[in-house]
Length: 136
Image 1 (cartoon, helix red, strand yellow):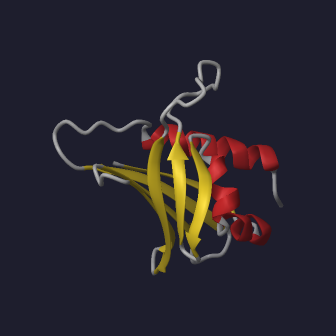
Image 2 (cartoon, rainbow, N blue to C red):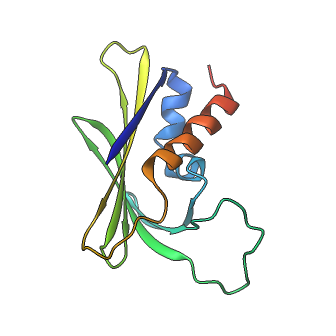
């Protein structure tokens, strides 16, 4: 399942989104933990909206973040360590240069795999955070 949002293009905004340290926290649920290489990070997923009931030592879901560039745009691929759930984020500047397109998709492998957070919900967080920043 894929969802997307089109925003007004801003060079500063686009540069910011190319840095995983800035982009990943915009999702609200993923958090960068460690940089393994230039294009690979370890991130954790916290599936809840608030940290109200967080317990010390609570096991967070570990994911591997891989960054690549393609004809579609900049790709952030966040895959669960066991390979059952994979989130895809694609950030692209539309050819006119006036719009920025952000796409979020998720793939799950196996019948019993569930998606911890729906792509539409993550995209809402990204969009709301970017609108709050109002980078022009």
